[in-house]
Image 1 (cartoon, one colour):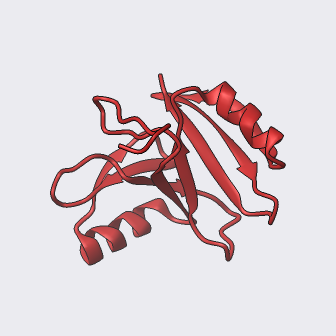
Image 2 (image 1 turned 90 degrees about the horizontal axis):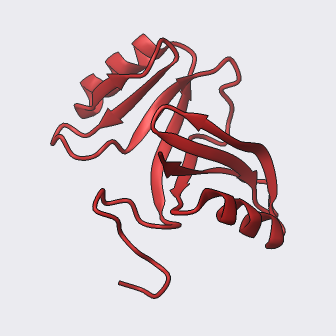
Image 3 (image 1 turned 120 degrees about the horizontal axis):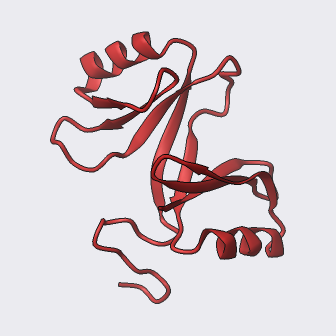
Length: 127
């Protein structure tokens, strides 16, 4: 494994692309579409969020999130971090801008940032 990269027992790799969120206006219609088109399997985490896995039953690879602000630019790419606060500080030190301060959600914590070009990404850490 490359220097500075580690994989935990859960398969998450520090600072690697780990998860993709797709904003949708109608979560039930979106779940029906992605199930029919790709065979994705969903885990509901409330009325406005559902994680998805491939039909092979592998790890959760993304989620659908209800939003009235679905826009061009597409899904939100999430990186994984073993130390969320240190990663947030590193983003700022490198010239990025934290858009959403670290917060807790079921299963962990996360924050969103903009890179110097304005692209929004997220970073999460397991609980």
